[in-house]
Length: 293
Image (tube, rainbow, N blue to C red; front, side):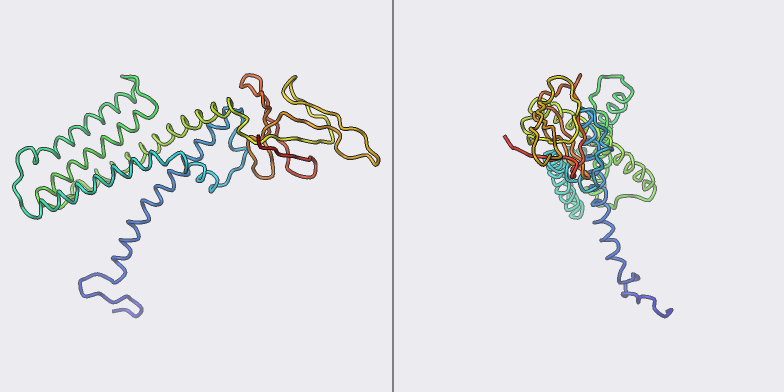
């Protein structure tokens, strides 16, 4: 054995082999879920601020900001997916236990995995037809049908092998399983994007109708700002001795967002057709007061 090479554990494996497999198994799903969270946060933020005429790229949110913004909206869908996954794992282990005991199942039990695969195939075909506008599919219908159908097809096949007490996957199907994994991942990102855009747009419409939920802002400036008539209340501050730097006060504004030393202010009576959003640097050039109603 070469110097410095890890010794064999007696079973033909190096000591770190099992640890490497374990770490890969744990990290791969974590990375995938993290990527989904980030992707959701970007799509959600983009849809939310696009409603107010702001390109989300101008906000300059960090990766952590995007991930945090996605958390609250994903509790229900993530919880549902985890419950379904838990049920699938329990059924899998039950099927493996039955297969290991070589128990003869009734006809219905033997056919159940094949029925599951057939249902998956039907869902997949419906997803394909929806993608080609053969029927009016919703934004999330097509990716969910495609991804869910493929998962059911493979899951049914896995159960059929486990009930028979044989090992899956077989060598000839490994490449097909790799392609299925890629397609399911693509469908997942597609569905997450559609859900995030819809959720962000819904949140924006609700916020636009209830801007009182955002902090009220009083803004003092040295120079006069322009707002369309009726969108902000301007007050000329009285002269003082010695003269003060700030001469104009603007009220009737709400803080829409704050990022990278900039405040995005929106009038309380903002309207999508003719509303403005004011970008103000949060520095010595202005004086800002906040109030929560």
